[in-house]
Length: 115
Image 1 (cartoon, helix red, strand yellow):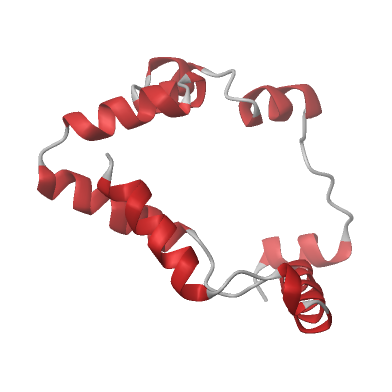
Image 2 (cartoon, helix red, strand yellow):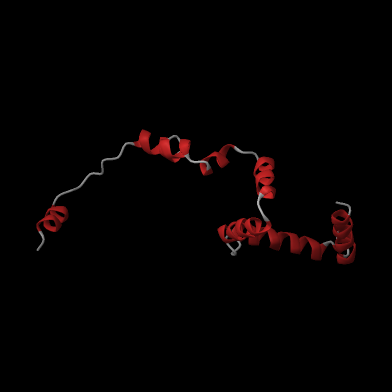
């Protein structure tokens, strides 16, 4: 048997863990975060991110878009499923509150054509 394995198995081991350091690094308060250009995205507004995005060549925009899409889970959370069920139930109980799909699509097309 390996000596280190027996010692680890027979003696309690305590982690050398400094909560303050961990929280500082988790919050991005460390040298790498301060020196990395990518880390500065955390302080950019959505408008600033979009401005930088639109400066990329179209291939770069596609790459960023693909990577962003990969970041999101395709599965709905139980809360999202419950909300969709609630809305569907309301629509079935009160069809007079709903709008025809053709009207919704026409509104969307009109809004995007005006841009």
